[in-house]
Image (cartoon, rainbow, N blue to C red; front, side, top):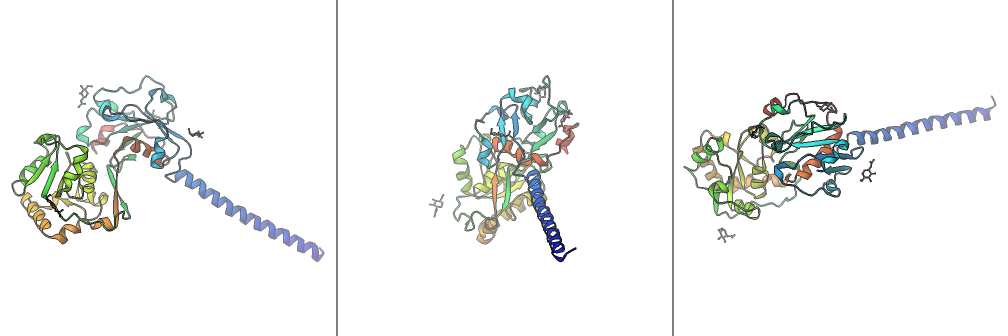
Length: 347
Ligand SMILES: *[C@@H]1O[C@H](CO)[C@@H](O)[C@H](O)[C@H]1NC(C)=O
Ligand SMILES: *[C@@H]1O[C@H](CO)[C@@H](O)[C@H](O)[C@H]1NC(C)=O
Ligand SMILES: *[C@@H]1O[C@H](CO)[C@@H](O)[C@H](O)[C@H]1NC(C)=O
Ligand SMILES: *[C@@H]1O[C@H](CO)[C@@H](O)[C@H](O)[C@H]1NC(C)=O
C-alpha cells in the first residue's frame, strides 16, 4: 500500500470509529429520554382517559376542558359520561355509592381487556361497609394509604419553605379548640375529650355542639386558639385527614393528634409540628403539658420552626385527585386483581 492510501485508510477508520462513538452517545441520550418518558412521573406516553362512574357523595363538579392541565398534568382526560365506558383506560368507583346501592357496577357491559377498575375511598375502614360483594372486580385501590396503588393523601409535607419568616401568632384568646360534627360517645376521641376538659377549657364547634362553622369562619376561629384537637374519628393505618392538614396547619394552631401511631405522623407531617396524645400517661399530663407550652413562648414557637424548612400541600378537589392517576399510571401494576378487597381494606 502506498503511504497516501494507508493514510486515507486510517483516516476513514478514524472517521468510522468517531461516528460509531457519536451514534452510541446519541442512542444513550435517546434511551435516557425514552426511559424518562416511560418512568418519569409527569410524562405519560399517551393520552389517558379516566371515567368517574359516579360522583362521591352525589356532589358533582364540571369536567369540561382539560381539567388536569390546571394541575400541570398533561394528556390526562377526565369524564363522568358513562357512555365513554368502552373507551376509558381507567374507570373509578367511589365506595360509598357502591356500598349503599346508590350506584350499580356496569357488570352487564363488555369490559375492555386493558381497562383498569379503581376502587376509591378516602374513609377509614370502619366507614367502608359491604366490601365482600366487591371481591374480584377491582384492579387498583385509591385511598389516603401509602400502600394504595394510587395514594391520594389529604395532605403532604414538602421540603422547602414557602414562608421562611413565619411567626407563630402572638395573640390568642383561647387555649384549645375542637370542631366536631359527628360525635359518637363510643369513639376514642370522645373519651379523650371528656377527660381532657376536666383539666383545661376546650372551645367546641360544629354541628354536634350546635355551633357549626361556615367554610369562611372555620380557619379564623381555630386560629384564635393555641392548640387544635386534630382527633380522627378512628385510629387507622395512615388515616390522617383534613383535621390535621387544613384545620390545624392552615389555621396556625398546634395540632394535638389522635389517630395512627406517632411513627406515622413523623413520617407524614412536618418535623416537630404536633403533640401526640399517646405520648402522655394520662389526660392530666397532656393538659399540664399544653399549659406549659402555652405559657412558654419559646416552647410554643418551636412547634412552628418547620415553616423555615418545609411546607404543606393539601388536596381537597376530587378532580385533582383523579388527575393523580395519570401521574402514577406508568408505574402502576399492569395486571392485578383484588380478590379479597375487604382484607386489604382492613389490613
Ligand atoms: C391527545 O389529546 C389531545 C387533545 O384532545 C389531541 O389533540 C391529541 O391528538 C391526542 N393525542 C393522541 C396521541 O391521541
Ligand atoms: C349494605 O348493603 C345493604 C344491601 O345492599 C344495604 O341495605 C345497606 O344499607 C348497606 N350498608 C351500608 C352501611 O352501606
Ligand atoms: C388580642 O386578642 C384580643 C381578643 O381576641 C383582642 O381584643 C386584641 O385586640 C388582640 N390584640 C392584638 C394586639 O392583636
Ligand atoms: C382487572 O380485573 C378484572 C376483574 O378481576 C380482570 O378480569 C382483568 O383481567 C383485570 N385487568 C387487567 C388489565 O389486569
